[in-house]
Image 1 (cartoon, one colour):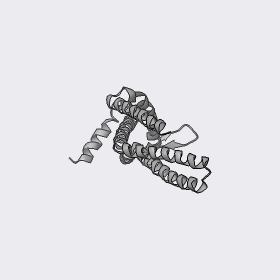
Image 2: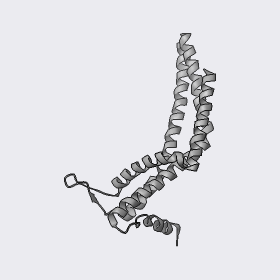
Image 3: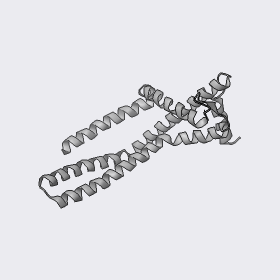
Image 4: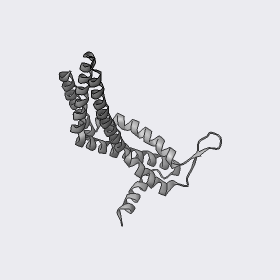
Length: 184
């Protein structure tokens, strides 16, 4: 038995909890969404920890450039001000797209879950009670994913690993703030 077959068996077992098809579908989809949320948050925490120094250096550099641009503005040095702002824009772009890439690590498991759901539920539709409209697995997964995100945000401070990550992030944010205040 290959890994895909074992994974398929594990995931489909989420959809066989009560024995009633419709409740099982929604319970299973919510549990699958919750698994993707947890894996996404875990991945994001690992990626952030690996790149934390890089992001801190970019933030510190932005603080320095802000101070330099304000000094150039006070001295009415237009060319220096423009040069510093150009570098600040480049630095901000690096930080912005780094954070944008980091945010993608929240979502990657959802795409795999949707790919698996397509193999199992692509022909199934549910009425929306609005005219004759129906929806399929994508919309139900999206709704369950949003609910799972909300539930996980509430549970996160109570889970050991994620509580430790939150404590680490708060401590690091305090250090970053102290560095910014000392630079200013």
